[in-house]
Length: 344
Ligand SMILES: Nc1ncnc2c1ncn2[C@@H]1O[C@H](COP(=O)(O)OP(=O)(O)OP(=O)(O)O)[C@@H](O)[C@H]1O
Ligand SMILES: *[C@@H]1O[C@H](CO)[C@@H](O)[C@H](O)[C@H]1NC(C)=O
Ligand SMILES: *[C@@H]1O[C@H](CO)[C@@H](O)[C@H](O)[C@H]1NC(C)=O
Ligand SMILES: *[C@@H]1O[C@H](CO)[C@@H](O)[C@H](O)[C@H]1NC(C)=O
Ligand SMILES: *[C@@H]1O[C@H](CO)[C@@H](O)[C@H](O)[C@H]1NC(C)=O
View 1: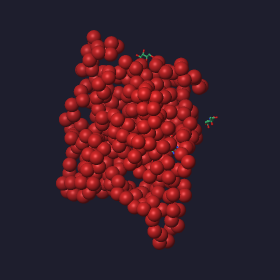
View 2 (view 1 turned 30 degrees about the vertical axis):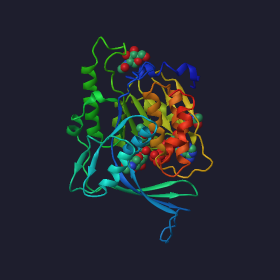
View 3 (view 1 turned 90 degrees about the horizontal axis):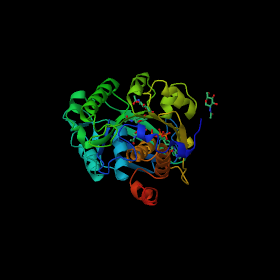
View 4 (view 1 turned 120 degrees about the vertical axis):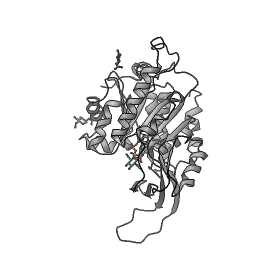
C-alpha cells in the first residue's frame, strides 16, 4: 500500500516519541553507540584475481566503524553528535582520536583500554564497480558495557542510535533509556512538548545474524539493511517492512534500504513511503553508503522532517557520497540540498 506524501507528513512523526514538528529548537546531541576502528583502504582499478600481485591506485588510513561513520555524517550535516564506544590505547589511537576531533565529534565518554588491540578493517574498493570488500578484525577489544553506559547524562541527548551488535548488552542499555524516559517526563509534560521529551531510540540492523532479531522489538526507528533483510528470507523492500513489522513495537517506524533501489519506510500506522536512489555520474565508493543514508535520515527525523522527506534526504546524500572517495568534502557537496531550500 503506497500512500501519498501528504498523508504521511506530520502524522507519522508526531508518533515517534520526542520527534515532531514541534521539536524544541535547541537540539541536544545525537549519541551513536557502537564501534570505531581503523580502516586501511586500498583503491584498485579492478578487483584482484586470487593469487595475483597488483598495485593499488591509492591507499589511505581512515577512521571507520559503523557508529563512528554515522557520527561523521551527522556532524557534516551540522548535527552536534557524540560517539560512545571502546578505544584501544595500544595502537592507532591518535589517528582515530584526531579524526574525531577534526570532525567535531564528542568522544568524552569513551572507554580506553591500554593493552588491547585496536579493531581494524582492510577495505578493497574497486573503481570499476564501486564495490567495497571488507576484511574486519577485532582481536580482543572489549565491547561497551552497561556500566559504561550508565555514566552518561541522558539530558544532553536528543536521540540515541545503536549499531546492531553486542545484542544482550544493548538491550539492557535501551532498558535504561526507557527507565530514564519514564522518570524524566512528567505527566504534565506528556503531550505538551514541554520540558524533557522521551529520547527516541534508533537501531541499525544489517549484519545477517539471528541474534539481531532480538533487537527488533526495542526501537522507535529501525534501519534494516539489505543483508539482514535477505537473511530473513525477504527479496524486496515491501516484503521486508511487512515482515519486520510483525516483531517491532506497534508504533515503530521501519526503514528498509536496498542499494541502487533506494529506500522504503513504513510509518507507525502502516502507511508506506518510498524514495528512489539518486545515482551519481559514476559510483566510486559505496563504503559507508548505509551509514550515510542512516545518518542523513536520522538528521531529518530528529529535526522534525516527515518520514518521506527524511528517506529522500538519506538517499540524496548517500547518492552524493557513493560518487566520491571517502567522506571528506561531503558537507560542501551536500550544501545545496541541506541549505538550498533554507528549510533545514
Ligand atoms: N550504487 C548506488 N547508487 C546510488 N545510491 C546508492 C548506491 N548504493 C547505495 N546507495 C544509497 O545508499 C543507501 C544505502 O544503501 P545500502 O544500505 O545498500 O548500503 P550498504 O552497501 O549497506 O553500505 P555500507 O557500506 O554502509 O554497509 C541506499 O538507500 C541508496 O540511497
Ligand atoms: C558495519 O556494518 C556493515 C553492515 O552491517 C558490516 O558488514 C560491517 O562488518 C560493519 N563494520 C564493522 C567494523 O562492524
Ligand atoms: C516482493 O516480494 C514478494 C514475495 O516474494 C512478492 O509477492 C511481491 O510481489 C514483491 N514485490 C515487488 C514490488 O517486487
Ligand atoms: C501508538 O500510537 C497510537 C496512536 O496512533 C497511540 O494511541 C498509542 O498509545 C501508541 N502506542 C504506544 C505503545 O506508544
Ligand atoms: C550507521 O551505520 C550503519 C552501517 O553502515 C548504517 O547502515 C546506518 O545507516 C548508519 N546510521 C547512521 C545514523 O548513520
